Image 1 (spheres, rainbow, N blue to C red):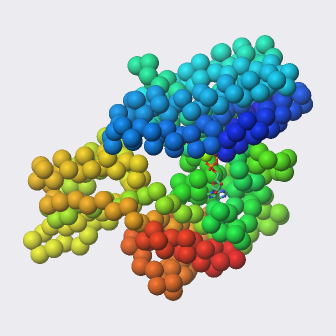
Image 2 (image 1 turned 120 degrees about the vertical axis):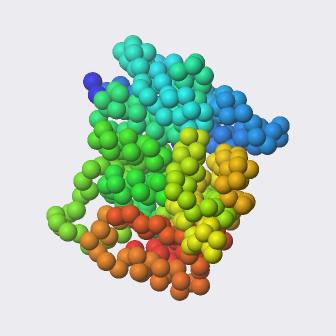
Length: 407
Ligand code: ADP
Ligand code: ASP
Ligand code: MG
């Protein structure tokens, strides 16, 4: 009997009616003869609401307690979905991340999954249960609950699909697939039938929130096919896999797969740091130790007294860790002062086809500058070009880039 792993995001389980709809959908999969494992997120905006609640008590709540708090969101939805399934006459059992055997590396707020001991899940499946598992959470080596980072339930689902050797991991969400840009922002965005792991990974890492980047990384590593589709009807969505369907065209003209944007970034700048060997390794070594991801780095030109400015881009959610680290560096004489600026955003053009096509970068800059928007930082890889622009201009830039490359 084949195993299917189905993941439902927050909007799909936002209220009792939607939970009932998910229950019917999941039940159908069992009726078709599959063993079914369901991974669910917290209902609607529950995670955001819990964060706001904690902020009423503290500006900097402990990361351990935040994980304890946020993990309760998923615990509500698994129990409610199991209750709904019982009402429809299905055998179902809910399991927390811990009960489902997720072992993490123990880093609060951004844990990685080390392994899954799936013995309990397999036992429950063998007893005929639909197994409903809390996404986003796992157990640390010292016995604490840790979470996987915002949007992490996708990664919980892919990891479980790999562990159970499922044929496919289905990600049910509030859009009917992966689009060439966020359909909320770009009305003319097109749905993709297929997308390669590499392109999806860049899109996700550059802010296309439809999939958690680490879920795509994991799927690629283990060759797990993903199907991103809507939970509202039975339409087919987007298949994420190694080779995309080129419709028989060997070198298809699809240079750009999509345009992504990320409004959740900040730019940190350390001013007047001495231009000495080992500087970058000291700064970024410390940030890495604190598990702060750094995306783009610019070392400014030297000033007359051999000092320079150092800027980098990170997630706004890491602001407190960056403030702490840079504050200590300045106090220790490394740099004169520092500044965090969260009025910026990142816009990116992604496509495997651009490796061999010169001119994509030039066209990107031309489109942005023709809008009178100043590009603050640029980074490129073989399959993407990213620009930092003022947040207020980001939506305009995304629409213009989409029109220029995919319109
Ligand atoms: P879930 O709660 O199901 O995990 P998310 O809100 O995390 O849902 O992800 C779905 C959202 O991702 C969509 O509503 C859409 O606005 C956004 N999104 C951003 N970029 C894209 C894209 N390229 N294709 C599809 N959706 C995208
Ligand atoms: N509930 C968590 C979040 O809102 C995890 C997820 O939805 O994937 O980030
Ligand atoms: Mg999500």
